Amino acid sequence: MGRKKGRLYFDCLGIALVVFWLAMIGSLVKGRHFQGAEATADRTAAAAPIESVQREWREIFLKDKKVGYATHLMRPFEGGYFIQEEILLKLNVMGFGSGLYSSTQCRVTSEFLLQSFNLIMISGAVRSHISGRVEGDVLVLETGRKGDQRLQSIPLTEPPVIGASMSQFFKSRKLHVGQVFRLPLFDPSAMAQKEIVVTVISKERLKIQKRTYDAFRLEAEMWGKTLRFWLDEEGTTLKEEGFMGLTTVLSSAARAPEGLDGMDGTDLYDMVAIQPDRRLPDPTRLAYLKLDVEGLDRGDFPQDALNSARQNLRGRVLEISRERVPSHASYTLPHRPFAPEVAVFLEREFNIESDDPEIMAKADDIIGEERNPVSAARRLTHWVFRNMEKRPILAVPSAREALRTRVGDCNEHATLLTALLRASGIPARLSIGLVYTRQKFYYHAWTEAYLGQWVTMDATLNQMPVDASHIKLVEGNLDKQVEIAGLLGELNFRVIDYRHD
Image (cartoon, one colour):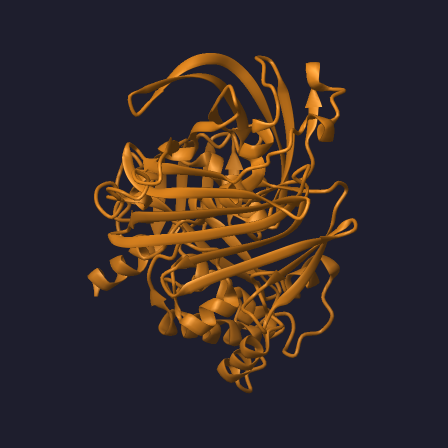
């Protein structure tokens, strides 16, 4: 039995790295503004036309181990360009060999302004599909499978530029040290917008595969981390350094697919785990935990979720107490009107499809005639726990896909439970943070439901409420969850005190 519990923890994949990586491959850059010497430059005039087909290949490394490759194609098309970027990753995640394939296709104008795009991500049996088109000052997004798409419109203040065309954007401009680019990002995989600033830091020599280049080094800050890029004098991207040692290097058609060994060696999940100074016995029974935490005082990290009903942060001291679950909620099902700040957690989101007919039917089937939201929430939690195969998935979580495939890690479990709760009339939201197992804290996702008070539940571990080793860092969907990417590798815990039931 103990081994089974350990495996249930073990099968939870932290979302931060996955969402960050998807943001990097699927980002849209919404306009570009310049400071310094380029402040008055005309963007469209600076772009030299590219009249021939452009192809590039890159190898992807994680801590010096090759884990994937990317291909990039651009060709002139109807007064603009057609761009395609494909990425294949093979990683060791919690002892499983996990693969991720993504394909981004887009049509852009001659100034690289987006007209339409199509993004597909496949990981095992899970397939994510997002497409979009610009209609005036609106970006119309479609999610879901063919014949079953959902539409969402996002207002635009400027014509957007697709991230896949960034290398061509730099190829058409003369770089110089000290130049600054402001890049307001919109990422369709996270439905998030965030401005980053890219600075041309220096000009230096860079050696790649026995060849030495004269290169410009560019740097950008994102989620508290420094990202580095090297471009040659023609603007071709030579090398990129991202989070946790993820690196891409310019390659060739013959070399790029060779020697993928990402299935062996360092486990991706263990790389971001946090080992406290001492062991916490029997974590599932933890009712109280007090930690000295180093690394949470980063200025750009939101700290709202760290102080909630079950958590309290004072300076570096964080206290977590497992809450009591009421026997009855303050309302009965079907739900009565909620205050606006609670009612928002009944609404569908692009990957929490609580109004989907299949999800609504399944929620009705699970709760039956139950009208007590507390009992209904327990039934839904147990159902997801029993009916989902626990396996790491490198993809954007979708409640509808999770219900259909019945496979996923903690992200799919939490997203599906959140959608089922909302479909039942119970306000629910996602929590992202850490959980303790195997003598370390691992990144994890779970759910909170409003039952007159916010109550935690973990469909991956079949807990309601969750134990005190669950540390909430952020709450909300993908646009909020990416914020913890900057904490990867930065946190240290010292156990001050703990208590069991």
